[in-house]
Length: 166
Image (cartoon, rainbow, N blue to C red; front, side):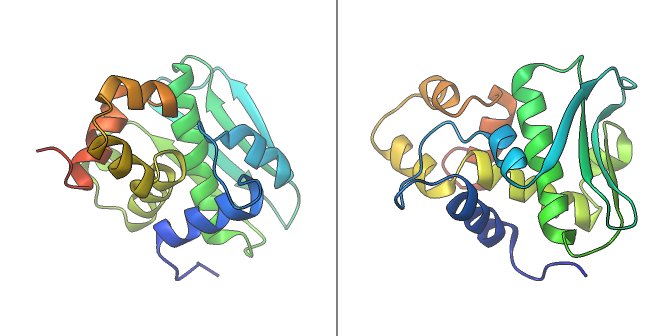
């Protein structure tokens, strides 16, 4: 059964339950540690160039997330956060199977489940409130990118979605 809460709300809940300490968030958010706390195996493997990663669980068994070993560490972090989004949205389903591809369908942004997982990943790794605060305080995009350990492309896209830049 799919979660009906917003990706922002679910990402915030996940951070509170599995990352924040004494009600405070530290940066960068570590999706690997969150996955470990959820008992999800994370494996870095040589995947097809058009595959960033995938999540799989069969018959209620253990959940595994595979990341493309050829991707940059910041890309792997985002892919892991994205796959965690699929997990959170479908955690009560006995079977989970999503593949994060780099193709025309993925880049068109029309698949509702992929859009949800991308929004979840963006909020998990780049919380809107923190990003807006740092930008208002005058931190540069590069300083924020380094603090969050995300790619320039991911940060730029997030800042545009938050209305911080055009």
